[in-house]
Image (cartoon, rainbow, N blue to C red; front, side):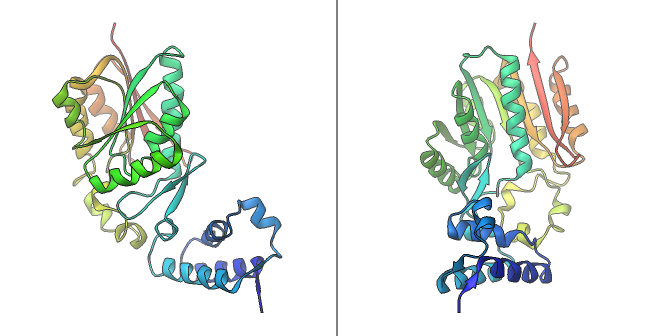
Length: 288
């Protein structure tokens, strides 16, 4: 007896809700297994799964319910319309971070001439989602990326190769390689670890037990990395520069003040995400 797609999804939805997991995971897994987009999946609801597909589908959802993020089980996540490889050495890219990328691309267009070549660094690259997307979306950006973990860099390098992005990789701690070699930057982008330690202890097991601690926690109050940036940025930025940070909800004001104290004349802006949370801080620096 074969199982039809609509029957598999119905079972998955009940199973996931029963176990307090997001009930759309079934769709995500079937799209991946059948190599179909959402429209193709929904228009083929009466198609049958093979016995192997049905068993694999059940097995993946059972592992997910036990606490494994579905992105790690599948080995991929979508970001800005592209497929990125992910594993437990990197943070799973979030939809909110797409808004950070969008904000950078827009400000680059308004601040610089169309064909100006610019030096950009993505600090703490993880899977490479931010750096690779920016490199592919704007060929005038010479994109550097840096991470403290060689394991993360390997994942990002693999993604850059698969997606055909030209990115320069650095292994190091925050901006240190650039402080050491005196290289100046036009744009600094980062989604650094920003979760306060006490909040990390209360995170869902899907995040806390699987995603790398080093990519999540930013000290007691979550602001450690922004303090270091505020101290180091004056030494690496060009006279005209853009800084773009993702921040934790409720941290916008604090991060904006840190940047403003280092750059009193710059324009610092807190931007809210699609869910109405203060999620991004942008700084535009134009020296007269």
